[in-house]
Image 1 (cartoon, one colour):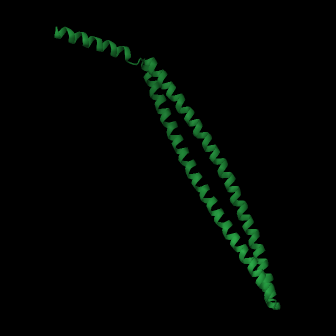
Image 2 (spheres, rainbow, N blue to C red):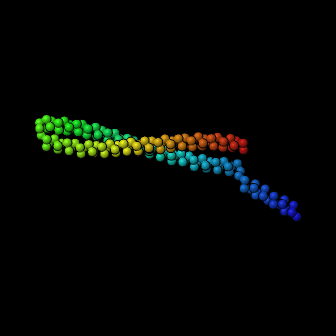
Length: 159
């Protein structure tokens, strides 16, 4: 009785295993579905990289404009310093003090703008790093997908 029960159990388990085993066609379909999902993910990563490129370009433009503005303000500050020196030479100390105060406030504003530009440059560098990491990950995914495709095609050829 035990032997018969064991044989029936073994036979049923073999039949159920065969029924639940994945056929080669089902395996190929599953692989194709996974490849489609991977392709969608790669396209999404590509869109994100393009968006990062656009943000980086905008930030670079802002940094360039900020540097140009700082250059113009530097020229203006130098002109004020020359005017202040001329007032001191003439003996007009009150006018020189007013110009000195104006120059100091401008220097403070310029210092703040320089800090903002440095911050923008750091943001650009960080985004570039993120973009490069995303590109590398996307490339690795493409290589992996290609390897899986080659393996799948090789396995499908055996069917």
